[in-house]
Image (cartoon, rainbow, N blue to C red; front, side, top):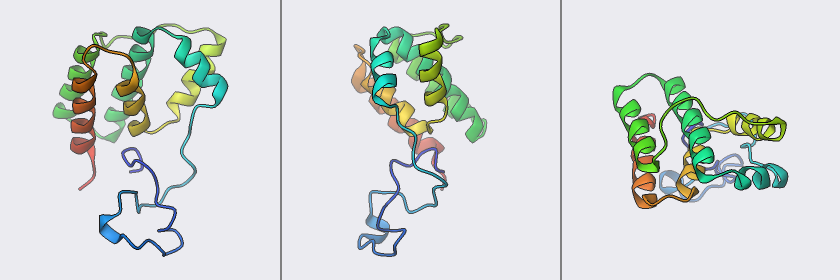
Length: 143
């Protein structure tokens, strides 16, 4: 946590969340606001080829999964993501100065938004990528 939560509950902080355990939002503590790509970085990222975007995201996802704790099953799921997207898990492509700004912003994001970006990257196997991503989140989630 907070690598895997979707969004913090804005009502929990003020003790006014009426949904309790059934709330779809995170009731954990978050040290700061989640990082998002600004308009310029989104434009730069979207101009990259889908293969380049997937390679960058897979490299970051692999690193984030390792930071959560080494798990053979989690590594298998990252490999399955790479196979589903059709991009080998190698070093991400080199990027220019503008790409470096995007990479810096992506590095500071948590795992869940990176998986979400990957799921939205055009791919023939989009449903499989989404299913593997959710399986990875379930596997890595704290009990």
